[in-house]
Amino acid sequence: MDNQDCCTCADTLAMASIPKQNWCQPYEYEKALMEGTIFPCLNLPFYKADEGDSTLNTNTISSNPEETEREKLLTEISTISFAINDLTLYLDTHPNCKNGLTLFHELLKKRLDMLADFADRFYPLTQISMVTGNCDCNCYGWGEGPMPWEGGLI
Image (tube, rainbow, N blue to C red):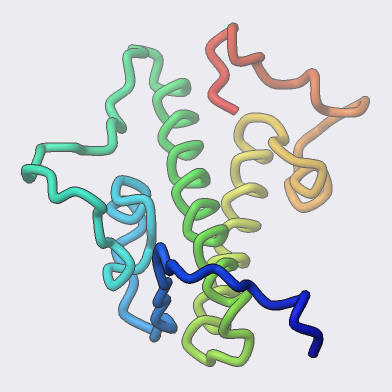
């Protein structure tokens, strides 16, 4: 190795120590979405804040039962999708973790089932749900549901 490739600074400003994450029992998915991670062992805030009453707002404004049911199912899909994304980050560094892989497959199946259910009851949310759901689309189905400014929460 050539000395030109080495840092010759006399001062060390910082040394990082990043412990390897171990598997821990995940939060309930609604709590995980509020906390920003599915793993309680990673929930280490930079600044300790007072315990607040932060809750996921699943209350809907709509008095229409169909809209309320649609928004509830959208929230559930979002919650499971968040858990899958966070678990994917864990599996990037732990690709052989049996617990992680098992949960990943369970969550993926649950998400696909929920997307198919949503497409059956309302309209397709993804390209896959146009196939897995039994929606009656006579054309490419993205125009079937309301846009966000029309009350859709996509």
